[in-house]
Image 1 (tube, rainbow, N blue to C red):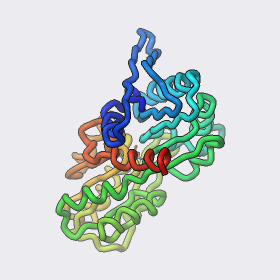
Image 2: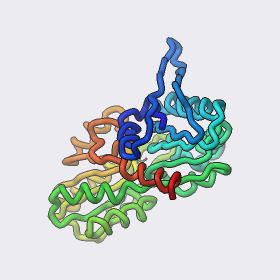
Image 3: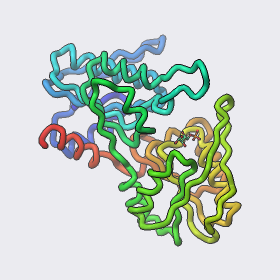
Image 4: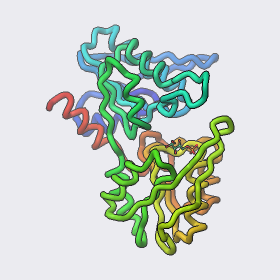
Length: 292
Ligand code: R5P
């Protein structure tokens, strides 16, 4: 197993669970920002662990370099564990003339030599359709996030998706937490990125703890708008859980200022919000691939 520079802790945890050898990629960043990776030893079957959170292009490039190195050294199988897959939100052209970036990312990975991709909370099913020769295994973090939520001692909780795209997600979360759920309607101005959540819904949430569930938090705009709407409807405490807490800029500050009590995410991105460990689920996925 090869630990990419973005995911050294997670890779170490997975390798420890699988009791496999861990090779830590050596990284050098040149003055112009270019990366150079070096790996002591590759194998016939290589597993690379590298999440592609910001700086996304740099982390993506490092993942491609590691893949190519393994392929050049004659690896028969290169599996990339990329818990957070950058560009997955650009899975279609929203405005005329836009490029479909994830399609390019998929082709680059295929050209680099990836055979199998393990990812977490993939943004949409559409993303997978852009890969042709790579098999994809998506792990849902919802069961473990919901298990974590159980320990939060929520009062009469309701799970809430900020948008219709997260309906299935929030349903799965609510099943594990054994609570009801609500799907809000969100719209985003495709030019400015500004988010609006529709406050027009009938479900009575007065006095209930609301737990917002999303695949990722980036600028925090979706969570902030949804939290405001929930509080206007009388929700008691509001929390946010997500697979990937990118937390760009002042996201955390804004979310807290909007009244959200806690933000819980997986360790796909190593930061203060990474309270739920993915290593067991990823190790299980790798085990089923290599020793079914
Ligand atoms: C959108 O479709 C996603 O599921 C997230 O809701 C979104 O990407 C979060 O972004 P932000 O935090 O910038 O609102």
